[in-house]
Length: 288
Image 1 (cartoon, one colour):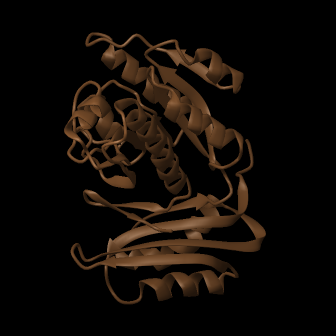
Image 2 (cartoon, rainbow, N blue to C red):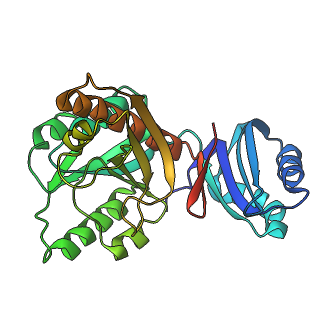
Image 3 (tube, rainbow, N blue to C red):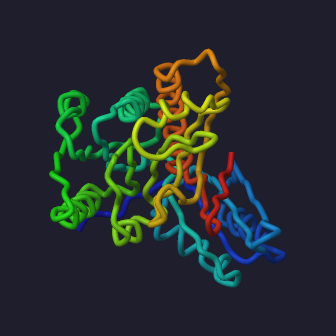
């Protein structure tokens, strides 16, 4: 039987009804057990009356996650907390889905390869073959799935099984142009991130940047959010935008928009992988 992995650097995240004594309970428990708090952020939402906290702590000794949970349990139990504990140094394992547009995927691959993202991409899944060579050049498994209304349930089961087999904690939709089923959305709740263009006004359907150019928009942008059954309405993690004017052609708008999409998704994935995002109903709390 394998020995449990041990760690010396942890991240604790928690959410609970707001009340007096939460910070003191966590801090005193860690201090009494010999841990040093390196980062601590908290937020009390005046609308939902919920309290959110992220704490990174370390010591010059190694313990397992289970042992550390046992240390923290007496401190968190009185507060009715939703809480989790993570190894602060381990990259988060991810499965990426993509269709034909590769600008977002390329940025994810580059940022990961350069050590700019704390993730490990275990596999890329696509409904087209276009990015097979690029993905395999990076040493990552590529899976092509034929997605039709008849095969969608089977393809979604494949992705869920793939995540389980590879230990992936997050599903990244890098301009994947298929709508996930309601059941799939429920099963990846809080651990699937999507990116879409966000234009003011918003243009749906084909060629959004050409529509935006015809209407003379002044701002283009992108929104990264968690996936829900309500299409493109999940809790927002990150947004980026740029002002434009009448001099920008449709092609220029599309190029700027693709850059914004790539940047916004990378920022959202980084925040999620660093355990800096906590769900707050239909919103998120994103710590710095």
